[in-house]
Image (cartoon, rainbow, N blue to C red; front, side):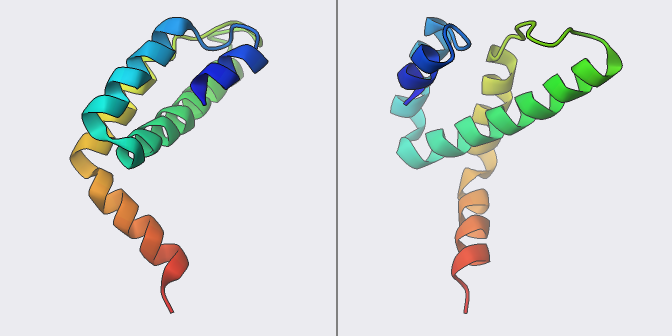
Length: 94
């Protein structure tokens, strides 16, 4: 999935990020890796938007994704089961 993103974005995601997520996938398993990726993407989008709004970076200027991967992975590792349960209960409670 990340390789497809890298190809479509024409270098927007580097090979190091893809390899890092391969290792994270082995360590956390598929569902926690998906949660980690979602958290990292969400956090990166928020921080990137704030940096653009405040003028810290220019539009189209690359921002390192590694720190967001780190935070997303730690949060998924520590709280992933709770996040997953919350998500399932939010959509599938009667």
